[in-house]
Image (cartoon, rainbow over all chains, first blue to last red; front, side, top):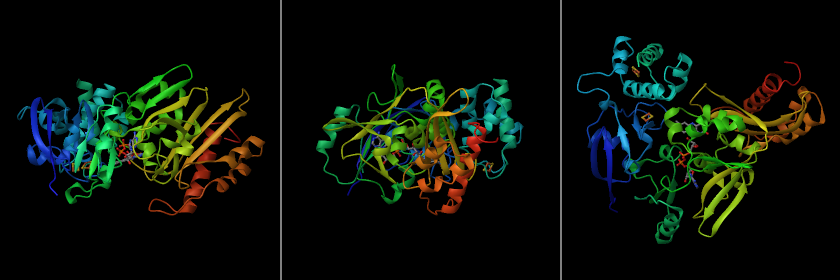
Length: 157
Length: 281
Ligand SMILES: Cc1cc2nc3c(=O)[nH]c(=O)nc-3n(C[C@H](O)[C@H](O)[C@H](O)COP(=O)(O)OP(=O)(O)OC[C@H]3O[C@@H](n4cnc5c(N)ncnc54)[C@H](O)[C@@H]3O)c2cc1C
Ligand code: FES
Ligand code: FES
């Protein structure tokens, strides 16, 4: 049986996007394979690790647990929107300066969760940063330097 | 797979009449459903009805007697609600200890209820505050107490075509707390969890007490024997032995039945001593 297509219209990183997608397509795959926005990573596929984090209507979500059709009418922001070309924003720069990155797989999600933490808490203490990073797993760094970077970026804003 | 996103209850019911497919699913936040499906292998229902745009099912409102939570209200909105923090501490705390931020932004209270997991973190608080679940179906609406609505793991009284629309909580000035024991501090499914609703007089004696525990039976259970023992005035050490009468835990990947029973008694005792100031601290 043919898998019917559905027309979706949404805004991604400020640009209007229209596409015809099957209802079985995950939003993460739509971003990575149809739009070549590969900043969001596909790791666990089950909402556990946060590597696929994006902003949807101003809130961080796991794009592996959302269907592309559900995003119809919404506004998305991915990690690609934070830096304009090679100009990193201050959160991204802080991750560089604090050596917060090893393999890098978790980092797009970490940076976006960092942005959400600043949005929610302004200048949070380290416990708050740790608590609100619990949806992002890093297998390399031990988190310390990631927390350092977010704390610094929050202080600077 | 077909996908529909009705904008109102009426539109939803009109849609139901036209559908012939047998396997269909209601989709809210999708945080329980999506990990279960394998879209790339076609392991999904034939029809998906996304209820997230249905009007009027989101948000927390209040009147003099009640707090009313729309079924589509997210766990993060419950966590952030000052009203919930002030009046329904156990629910507020359960939301705080629920998954991580990204999941909380999507997961809904209606989904937690309808998923009917024995470990659902929002449920013990709803049990001890005796929440009423409002359902809307093709033949009108009805209201059922949470403890009657959930009948087994993943099983509820929901009839075909019905959806949960609201959760009603009476404002009786009862305090409550929530406790969760997981295998790690966050992003963990409960090994045991419970909520305690209580009122105390100025000497610290209970004038009312209600406890519901999760992950220790096929559904959330009220710890009635334990509460009766406490209210009859026996010592905490003695009363705690009654807990085993109320629960029927099983072995699974997270813990054995024995572990669950012992852990529940230990964390209950801890909370009675240190949070509720009973027995010796
Ligand atoms: C990484 C991860 C961590 C998690 N952590 C926790 C945790 O700490 N504590 C916890 O309790 N749960 C946890 N969960 C489970 C899940 O997030 C919750 O059960 C959540 O509340 C489900 O809500 P939802 O809106 O996503 O439900 P969905 O997945 O959309 O739906 C769940 C079920 O309910 C039905 N349904 C939903 N809304 C309605 C309605 N209004 N009327 C009728 N039927 C409806 C659906 O058809 C489906 O059967 C976690 C899940 C993941 C993936
Ligand atoms: S890939 Fe989405 S949370 Fe892990
Ligand atoms: S840097 Fe490797 S997973 Fe975080």
